[in-house]
Amino acid sequence: MNYSYRSFKSSTERNRLIIDHCRNKSVLHLGATDAPFTEIKYKNDLLLHTQIMKVAANVKGIDIDQPSIDFLSTKGINNIESFDMNQLGNLDFKPDVIVFGEIIEHLQNLQTALSNLKSIMGTETTLIISTPNLFYILNVLIVLMQNRECIHEDHKTGFTYGSLRQLLEANKLSIEAFHFVHLPRKHYYWYQQISQWICRLRPGVSETLLVIAKRST
Image (tube, rainbow, N blue to C red; front, side, top):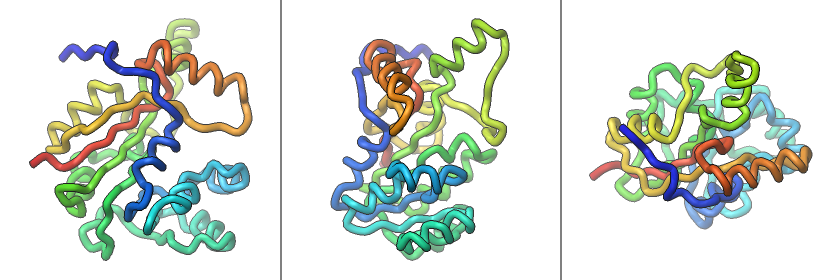
């Protein structure tokens, strides 16, 4: 398949897009602690879960990192529990929005993961998936200039716009919107400005992919 990026326009920070979709909704947030960066993101007010809590009608977080859950509990954040996403069908929560951020690249059995997500999705449930972009310009430059590949040690797979789209469509999830975005940062001002500039000029090499999807009817 041949996919063109010319129809994509400049987007925004990942968190801003997610927050807009969570406003006044019941939200299930998977990977809610954002471990292992929980403490530093909490300190810098960059923790997505707390930002969602400010706008959503109801929020439930699940994670498997108990120390991070315990840390956030000491900060008064008590709506995150340890829960295996393979048991999502047993979860007593009906979300309007499911936030599945920076998780899919860590998984080995993607079909099972998506089936588990679909088991708690109604026809109007919105699924938000974000994941690193394999074509991120720094990844490309490292290969071109240093003839090597740089990849997170815990990532099992990676995605481009085309590969993520084909995966979702093959698993009966229809794409409502697709965005090339960059991550929020309090520090590294110039890095942030460069990321935004790249996002506007060449979205296909932006830092992160974000897809809004629903169950196919």
